[in-house]
Length: 108
Image (cartoon, rainbow, N blue to C red; front, side, top):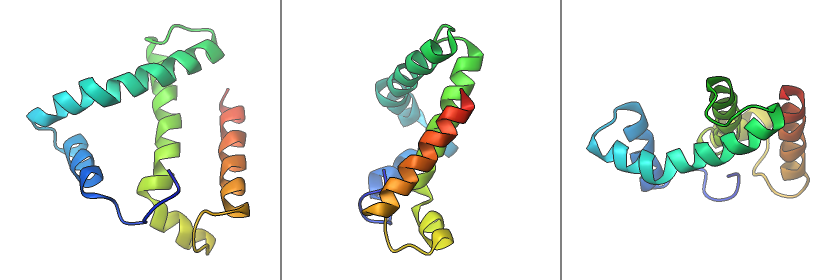
C-alpha cells in the first residue's frame, strides 16, 4: 500500500467515489471485493479477540485497522509531507511497519 505512484489510479478514484456516493456499481464492488476482505480480516481479528467474526464489535475493530492501513495509500501525500520523506523505501518503510504493528499490539 505504500509502494507506487502517489497519485491514485483511475480505478481507485472510482472505488472511492462509489464508497462516498454509492450507485448500482457499489453493490457489485462490495459483494465481490470489499465484503470478502472485511470477512477475512474479521475472522483473524475475531480469533484474536475470542469472538465470532460477525460480532459488531469485531467488525468495528476490523474496520478501524483496515482504515489505518488504507490511509497510508489514500493519504500517501499527507504522510510523506508530514514526515518530510520522499517515499516509503528502505528504513522508512521499516518504520511504518513498526508503527503499524505497535498500533495493532496496543489495540488487542
